[in-house]
Image (tube, rainbow over all chains, first blue to last red; front, side, top):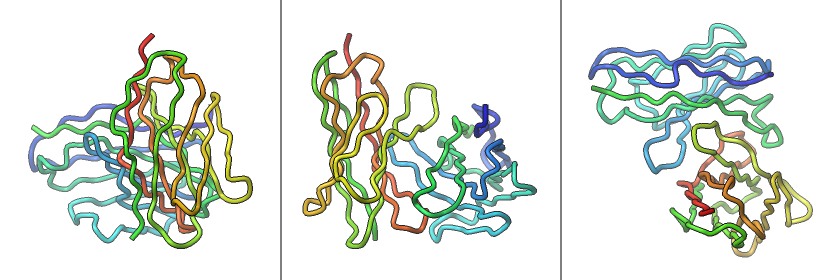
Length: 114
Length: 112
């Protein structure tokens, strides 16, 4: 089935050690999003790609970077994770950025920082 | 700035009880409204959406929501909940930019 796949489901890293989270999609959607969801809080958009165009949210920390090498894959890089970066990270895709195009979410990667 | 507020953080119901989850948004322009559901261990799924037209929107699994523009509200309802409806429910708004603003979520626990 066409879907959004996030790997791994659970990731543990050490304070300050770079970590990369992966997202792939078989929907051939143009847009890929990364959200951060902390415990008992709403998912918060970090950035998104429309094809190769990167769109960063104004309040996304510089510590967070993203790469999209091709249509299918998108990566979230956290350069120096702090304890406050422990969260669920959600990847989503949509055909376009207009609101009629719903977003399809992956299962998320839960990141823990030691 | 846009924001979404969900009044109930945790709701506990018995099976067959009726459900109403509140959602209010703040945005003066044209909005597009969504309810997403996240079952335990699963990804966020779209329950229903409102763009225009009939303000009473029907979604999957017997859920419906009513858009009341004067109250800036988009409450989710279901006449009779089942144990399988236990999940977290998120209201979200989109202002024609593709950016979803989520509420903080409501955890629904249905007792068998």
